[in-house]
Length: 312
Image (cartoon, rainbow, N blue to C red; front, side, top):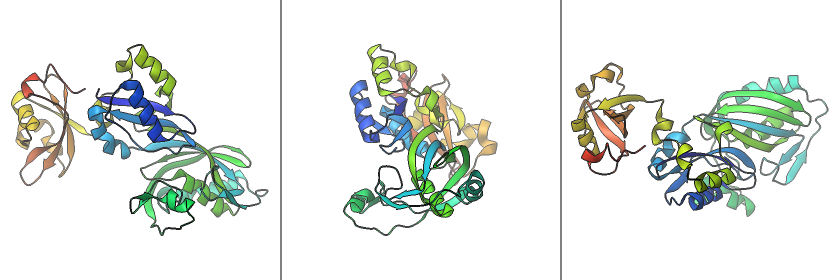
């Protein structure tokens, strides 16, 4: 079973537990998720099955959209509502105008200090394990990108934000740091991931729905093809001789695919399809040899049988 499921992760469940549940429901052993959600968060969690686990790295790079409910006036050690309250502050003077004035510093390319209560590892051990033991580990700021950050509702002490950001962004840090800038403290009360790249919450399946889908034998209707997350890359079509070369690990000359030759960028990736329209894999352009080298080939088996056994 090769493809991607768009799962709606429930509250109080780890991403790993969701993977285990999908593994049990589907019977597929080779499964992985694309982007961890904290147990207190809900929303879109793409689950990759079979050959699709090889495109997880591309899903990590996809833009994500969140809706976060920030509680002003209370600072916690975990930066969210699950933690211990370590400070309270006065919010009587906080209004929409003050919050709007504070938000620009959290837009664009910003630096974030990863929280101690996170899955980021130090010497192979998650930081949250050190935090629970009362050990503070020195961390370095990391550059992240926030493309959009807007107020969608304000009901003091709660302010609801919608955030569009790149990989590695800690929404809890934005909640905490916003409280610090406003001088009253803050924590993330709730978080919903609305979108990961092409996957939206409106199409996501809950685990009970997924179980029903598999029981009825309709899983194919909800399993996105492997190349669904690769549509931002250019595409090329190769003939039978070229597809055989790629399947066996050999490069093909760039002049053999003139339809995209004028837009070649050094070290760029491209999708590859057979003349029958089957997705073959990803190739990378090599400037030195003026050729396309196989990067990830998803077809399994003899090249002569690709029409009968495509990887979709």
